[in-house]
Amino acid sequence: MNSVYDLLLVLLQCAVNKSAVPETDCEADWDTVYSEACAHGVAAVIYSTVEKLPAGQKPPPELLAVWKSNTLSLAVKQMSMISSLFSVLEKAKNDGFTPIVLKGPVLGELYPEPLTRCSGDIDILIDQKDEGSLLSIFRSHGCLQETVSVDNQHEHTYILNTGIRYEVHRRLWEEKINTPRYKALQDAGLTSPDSFIRLQVMGRQVLTLGHREHLIYMIYHMAKHFVVNGMGIRLLTDITLYYNAYKSEISLEKLWEDIENIGYKSFCESVFSLCIKLFSMDSSIYPDYLNHDELSEKMILKDIWEGGIFGKHTAARELSGRFLRQYYENEEKKLPKNKFMLLLALLVPTRGELERIDFISLSDIKLVAWFQRTKHLISRWFQRKTRGLKNCTMKERMDCSMQRISMLEKVGLLK
Image 1 (tube, rainbow, N blue to C red):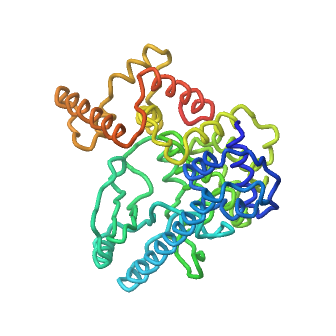
Image 2 (spheres, rainbow, N blue to C red):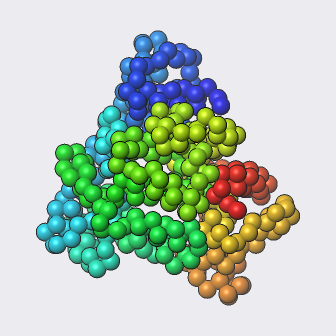
């Protein structure tokens, strides 16, 4: 761990636990601390803590002013998103249906300053029969764009003319993926109407998943992000605050039964142990945390810092994530066990990888598929170049993949 991450971790601990501001190193590299806080989605969360530091330990005035300005801007954006959500929910109620609000707005309420827990979009779950009514509501709000997720045909993104994005889920995951993990997720009954509850968001009630059900969904979402690109440190504070707030409403026996059936036991033991040690998660969720393998925790924490919420968009992680995703989603597919076979797998895309390229689905037409893939990779290379991001060599991609495979196997997310 380096001093930047040490300081960022201390500031985040103080922010979410509302604890006293500690003494810090006045020689801290504040530019990097701020950059990393932004990469992990916690810059606004820790701003108040940073602002309360003694005069000699604060960031330079110029940086602090930028930090404050961006925090206020993010809070205003978050308020606009919640106002938009309330408007959509009210119109949906008038039309006779109620969207289920997921994650962001519900989680924000658990932070000391709710508007600092900023989301990039608003996630809602609806019944497929209500999709037409919802689209009419979005159009009345000035919907500019609609896209369908390449990875999940039951997930649509709508962008309003205000710039607010809605991710609309007809299902929480692709049911056509016929694997033990997805069957177990279905058996967990996360979307059973009998389990839905109402929670407060900015003084108003919204319908959302049940307490255990939402926690399982958060873990599923976290694991998917962790495998594909990066999950960021904020996902640890999210589940910590969520469990601490609603632990009396969650059956731990049923929670762990679901976790084990889904195949997340080792991963959750490591994550919960980290949350207990770093952010004071109530240890009732995992009483044996002191005896947990610290190597797994260190590997996860290192990957979290290196990745950020979306893998910091490094080319090696992006390509590695796409490659590893196919093995995570298809538990029956075995990873290559030696470097030569792994290199071959990295160089030669599978049907599944080719089908993820949104401009081709007929991967049986090999010549066309390879041509389109090459075109896609060249396009991505130029996109990264124009955005000032570094592209990677095959060795960097290989090293990144090998390192992450070792970690993901250890925590049980890859077989």
